Amino acid sequence: MMNIKKTLTVLALVVFAGTLSAQDVSTFFTKADAFFKTYVKNGRVAYKEIKANPNGLDELITLAKDINVSKNDAKTYQAFWINGYNLSVIKGIVEHYPLKSPLDVNGFFDKTKHSIGGKDITLNDIENKLLRGNFPEEARFHFVLVCAGLGCPPIINKAYVPNTLDAQLQHQTELALNDPNFVRIKGKRVNLSQIFEWYKGDFTQGGKSLVDYVNLYRKEKLETKTKVGYYPYDWTLNEIK
Image (cartoon, rainbow, N blue to C red):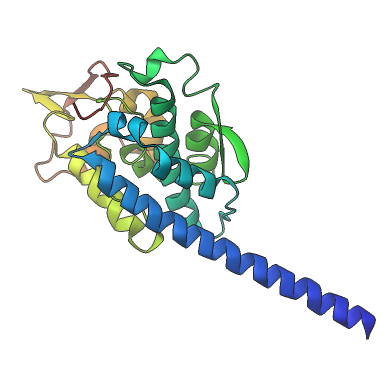
């Protein structure tokens, strides 16, 4: 009888912990959505305002610190870490603001660690180990992870959430690849963001060319034999002035 009671107690604690975790994740998405709506406009971030009133960001970072999401629940996991990445970038900028570029901070992406999701982790490791590493087939991550530079696809003024994540990934990818400032066509040549150079393997899975990948999302298709080049990445801070 005692063993049964112990087992039931353990099961109850597991269920209780799982319920708390689910509530925390839901609260995180709700509060993140409100934060982005308040401080993001037209793909830019109001860093100066956040610096002056950091309570909302600090609350989100504290909330996200101990949230545990399983990669088995892929949409929740991906949405949590996409938002977590973008919020950690904003936190990193605000801590050093004013500045002109994230590159002004030594080790911004590969040395500075953020306490989030039960881990102490760099931005590069969130991107490359947790997201790209666990879901190598999903190249659309590159259009929603925002590095605080103008060369990145624009940050949106809402949170990524599990039940709409696929549509949000699709929309942001289509938005970027139909933007003439992001995909720059000149005659029989196209110049792409250096994202396509740095992560070429993500876009050419299954034997696709870069042009093939871009055409998956473009309304006006590129010619198959279009020559591909890359334009320099703009690391200027994506701030609202």
